[in-house]
Length: 320
Length: 253
Image (cartoon, rainbow over all chains, first blue to last red; front, side, top):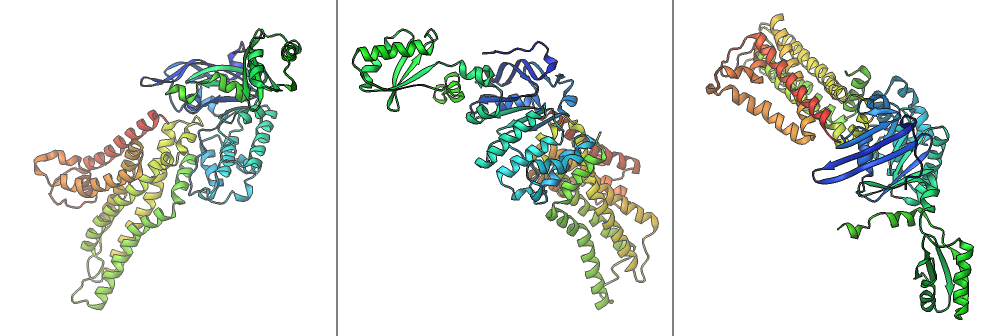
């Protein structure tokens, strides 16, 4: 599903075409086409080993692609890498720091590699992520959550147009997750683009405007969260007596692809040819009532991003 | 190219390693202070048996030892400077700023030199001061000898620091680099010097070049011109830094 296309690649925050990376015989990325517009939170979803971090490493120049082309903030890579990365802040895999330095000193070390204005942003960045009070403590005493926040502060030193955050919710407690979600939305509200790689599907659904799902090195779906969720099969849960008989009866209704027991109710999965909800629900109820099956409750199943993710990606057991 | 901000950042990373800084100071300045103190006490307690702690000959012996201490200090600081970004995982984030990896590597070398050279210079000055102040009735080292001794110490510090930064960028791990280079400078290099079969090629051995710069005779009596000795030291530094820069540039992280 590539629902939205952008004609001018220079207007995109990230644009890849046929991007591939092989490690020997194994393809970590295989012909990835990706378009991340500016000013949005973009989720990059995939199971462990799907290729998320490899893509990030290629974008940041930490590894070289085997095939394909990339553009970052309108700059063709690798030629325009320095200019592009000057306005990119990134956390790769997990935020790493010199443990013997304080949070403030770690930011100073990073700012030295940026332009001169980065040093002046250290105080503001620490304030923004709520670490000002602990800024002069050594990082070896920080929790994982504090290091995540210091990682975001480090990203902000570049006054970034694009932030690439790899699993930013890792190690955060529920309050920290809420804060991080708010911070990401705040950054997007300022016109920045956030590319968020995560396995926490619920977080991506709540935080991002668009997402891509990657599986075995390929992008298998790409669009707004709404489009991704909507693209999945519709389903209806029915609570009734004699669910086994009911399942047999409903499986024969045109438009039904499957009827199975699901946590005490009957889940009816509809095929793409099924009519609109009003008509199909009427048909299902009529079928049950005509055969003397008493119906207690009917509810449409809200399909989540997680459901879509699971239908589109390869299960672990299938990879072995 | 590296700028002052990058070099200052690398120096900060080294300065904040309290254990390493203490060890380096103790292993250089501390050793010199201890040796002169012990020799001075011995001389004061029994002048008939123990000569003065200073004087020209004592200076020559002391500065040769300080040269060895400078080699050790350079290996420890250079090995740390060359690997601390890689081992902590921070190098990936620094490279992701778009900054030239060569500049990042060269700033490590400059930062390490900025730490080692002042320490070994102060140690050389302390050695000279001790040799003059505690000479009693012995001849004091002349200006030429002092200059050669100081040059030896600075060359030893610069050589081992640069080689350690370069090799550690290639290897990527501090422990093995420090072990290998200490074995090279303290064991293998002096050993190569005495293998007569190697002939004039021994002029390329760092130990030979450093002795010549210090105007000290080598154990095996290998003769080398001062210009060649300086070129050998600069060659070792250049090759090590080039190897380290190449590996830093091509490393996938």
